[in-house]
Length: 256
Image (cartoon, rainbow, N blue to C red; front, side):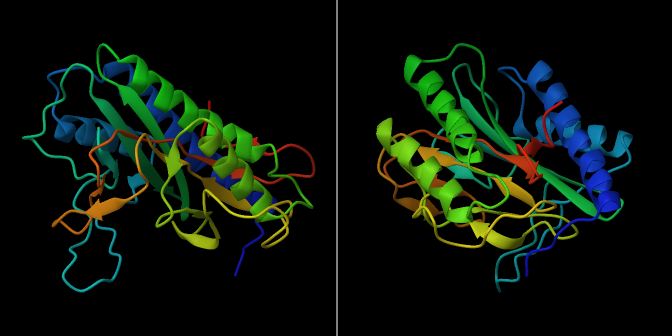
């Protein structure tokens, strides 16, 4: 069931989403070659806790037998890793790495969710273009995230833009509603038909997240049960924000 947030709930969503935005501000300032992904994880957790929030991803259990709860505070995925990469002291960032970070904070009972893709050090032209297309795909989608439109309008706009630029979206994972739960209805694929799905209403909070691959859209899951990689080894990028549907334009809650 899709939840419509009250004015009080919207203020709580704004507050937790600001925590996420401030966490990314610090990560962007400090990410550099030679750091471990574990260091990024620790930095993000300290920031969230300093702002009165906790990392919602830490200990998150998807309920599949044999898959342990997520062991870290953020997801850090490098190069051909699309999503859900597990931070490690042994994973050291190198110059030119494409690093996607997915962060969910929980404060006062509400979740805020966003993802960003960074380039460590010097970037290749191809990596820069992939990241820019992924980010722009989000903004192409939210042009349609208005009261009265349907969720399929957003999905269609994202997919059509990505494909027009010569890239692919993954179909096995999607955006989602968000609030008291990290994942709520509706599901928000990064492809679809316009005019389909639920009608958007003021008070809905949605996590819209293009996940874009430079090569073929096929993916694999690693043995850890979490990390998703591109089958052909091509680069991937991820961009996400939590937004609020209003009477007018959508409000992006995870941008300062």
